[in-house]
Image (cartoon, rainbow, N blue to C red; front, side, top):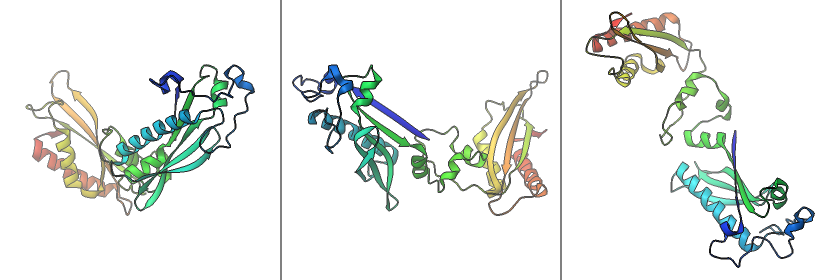
Length: 273
């Protein structure tokens, strides 16, 4: 999966307060732009662009992407630019970061080839830069995911580690067992002093994990219910059990599940349904 972005600017946007500077060389005829043969022989710029325009765009592009990289990986991350070739940009670069004792490529970017802008119509008489981010590569580095094949996993043990989390939360991937899951539901009536809104689910999750130990993979709130006549409040949670090293039997899971039920009754004075 990849995210691509483009930013184009006209002369007055690029050269604020510098009306004497130009995006294009005098030899570039904007009225006959389709007929112009744009050379990329110069490693610093395309033949149609002035050096001032190319360098200013390069500076903006690299500054923005270094800023993005530091937001993702921290201010102390070491970065370096490597010259590259991409068919739609020139000059082109790859950004690498020094991560876990290796240089890791995180993105590619460059100044958009002018003929692409000319053919686009509305973007004529502008200069643009573009970049592409490989999201899988970034996620693997940020979350310590060891195998790119996991990025396409639909296993709930993997997926739930990244659901409903804060964008800035520090997440480290926890290995998922290759053995099958066992799922048991737990429903209970709350005592009169608690409601579905005041019951602390996080405390419940902690209790389940304390009793069940490492075989508790996930705990999810499945359903809330208020009885229309008695007005009693009920909650239902799904508990997913899985062992890292072997297949659990349903009998083993049921035994642990009963121990959790007893602990929940003792802690909250609930009535198991």
